[in-house]
Image (tube, rainbow, N blue to C red; front, side, top):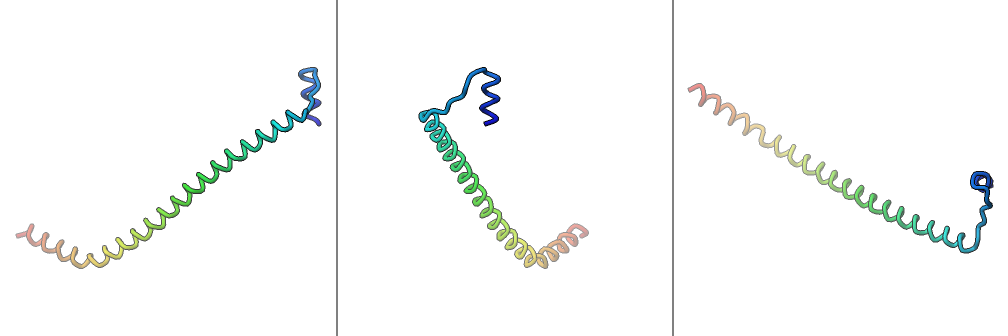
Length: 88
């Protein structure tokens, strides 16, 4: 009501809602709804993909940390051998 009154005052004409304009409004609303819904679904798919990659990366990092712990004694021995070879 307030918007219609402001429209009438600013343009000095009445605003009528005809059946055709109302149907056009509904059609436009449906189109906008579909576009927004599609965009939200695409963003959700990207979000889910990102979460999956984060989970697989976490698992890979855990595996690599365990491998590093397992290789640590061998690395220390190799470091000592290199240090001895450099000193000799």
